[in-house]
Image: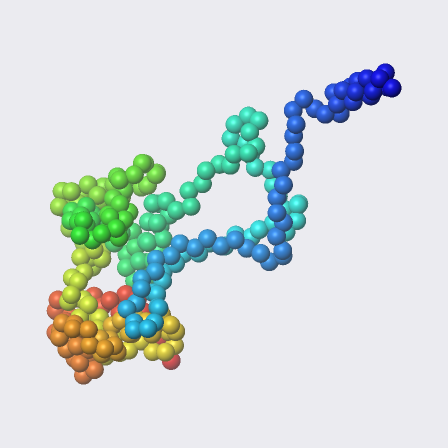
Length: 266
């Protein structure tokens, strides 16, 4: 019995050398998703609306949808960055400054502005008059976005860096020819009063859905209980109901309502 036991152990050792490789290896496993599945990435800025007994947020979001594999044949081999390395994936930047500038230029162009020229003017003015610390986190983020030199070189056109340099020299007038309206320098209170007046004169109708209702509530002081607001806001609404917003156009040349809406023939 002892001899049989020893032979059995020796045979196991020999078989292990023949069958089991020197380095253990196991195939990577992956999930297969049901048909029609997608992965969605959403980047959103949500602003709470001050309403009594209501939780309403005005949200601006960017979404990206990606299809997911339905069977094993949908998978592809990922190129290795280093020899014998198949576990690392190349790093990808989801959002960078070049992407943001391109999206901003397209948005401005669709809104009736000279997209690239107005973006250059905004970068210049942000460099000339930086957003101070009183603007909080949002101000700091905007200042970084509008300062190309604040990050490593991303292959941006030289014009963006030149705009920042022109701002430091207080020479932003060179961009006024192609972008007469300053997006950076809209006067706060006068333009807010004009927006309230314009909204009262020509309200955003029900066809604009929840977002239209939220904007209407925000720009209509009388829709909520008295909040000890400056009487100027209520006066602006009254003038809007009478159709006379001319006094505000002198100090705010661009209507904020026109920036976020357009006239549609019904």
